[in-house]
Length: 87
Image (tube, rainbow, N blue to C red; front, side):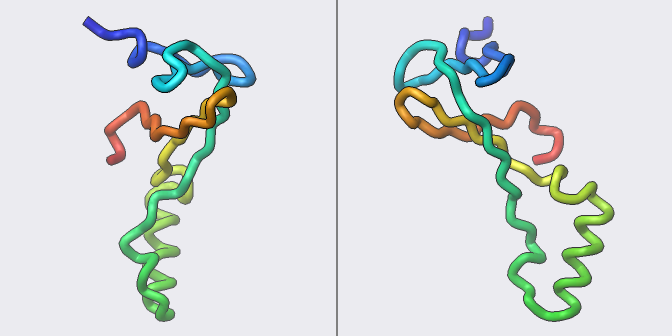
């Protein structure tokens, strides 16, 4: 039902993950990148206050993050978000 690529869990350090380019499980590094907010483009004082309030209410920078993994052998980088509940 599930193929091996979707079942792989990050574990240990460095994290092992299935690399589509190498076609095997390899060590990967993880990076979290903040998703842009709709308030990021408004550079006024009111826009800054809206961004601050949005960040405070929604849990800060941990709420809107994309997770990227990079293969340490070939350098292939891919977005690897696990859940869709916050998207």
